[in-house]
Image 1 (cartoon, rainbow, N blue to C red):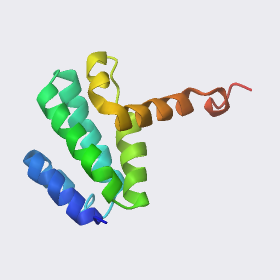
Image 2: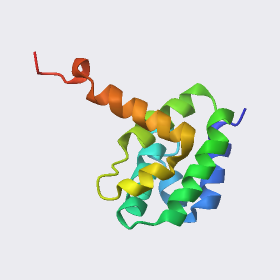
Image 3: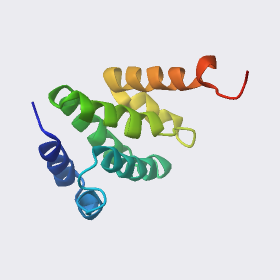
Length: 121
């Protein structure tokens, strides 16, 4: 089982430009904040149609999701994957792969289900 620090350190090795943000004192202790920052980083890659960066992220998460604890997994799903917006570049969504693609669709369906649209009673 990988701990949060090892997971984050490996992510920084892949994407060195994230180091300062990930290790910032306001962010360091919170995997939720770190995944929020990673989401902004990958969202920029989606906007720029940076398939190489996107594919590196997919490969990394596909390999590492099963190795991290549930708390880290939940942060990845809810603060990262579930917040990505593919409207500018829907073709990249197809490159999520089987596991991440299913998780993304499940989160999207949950978020769009009638019981979760508050204020529509």
